[in-house]
Image 1 (cartoon, rainbow, N blue to C red):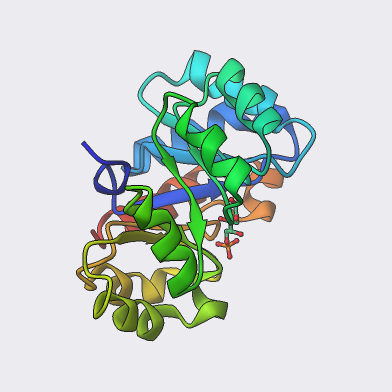
Image 2 (cartoon, rainbow, N blue to C red; image 1 turned 45 degrees about the horizontal axis):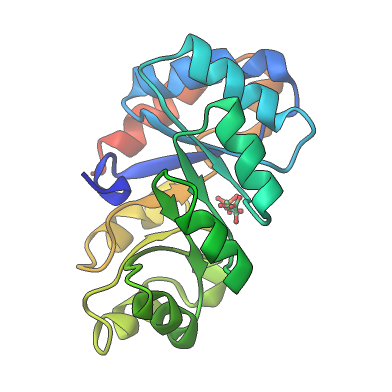
Length: 203
Ligand SMILES: O=C(O)C(=O)C[C@H](O)[C@H](O)COP(=O)(O)O
């Protein structure tokens, strides 16, 4: 099954304190969103992925903000089951293709989408979704490029999710609104679970 079809929403999680990794993952799973992307933006991100992989087996844990082959190696070693990149260079896409796990390469223009589709890659991350043109932009891409499907991410909030999911070329959406920094800092797992449950209900 494709990464885009596992869940309607992929939470994008920034972990500042590694002790929050397991409880936040459990809250997201309890809310009905088992596919979780931890971004490699913080020092403890790889350790967070490792802890979630070891302690929350119901979660499908992946690594986001993949920019280099070193990021890929570290993520796989930590236990990441999928990889997501904000954009795509030639060397990065070659490394992603060699990784052996599902991945969503980032693209934001028709030319970038076409370059990836030429390689047979037709499930992509659309980033930065809202800033690049959002729902209207994806609708336009579906005309000439109907065989490519996306996980739009970047600036998406719960209120815009239904419009994205209604598009034929959108499989799921990603976003950080499910795991607000203040909720993580306060250990408010009930709030995270509620946000996840609300988002899961949109699918
Ligand atoms: O980590 C990555 O791979 C990224 O490229 C970016 C993130 O997916 C977005 O920044 C999340 O967007 P927000 O929901 O607006 O916070």
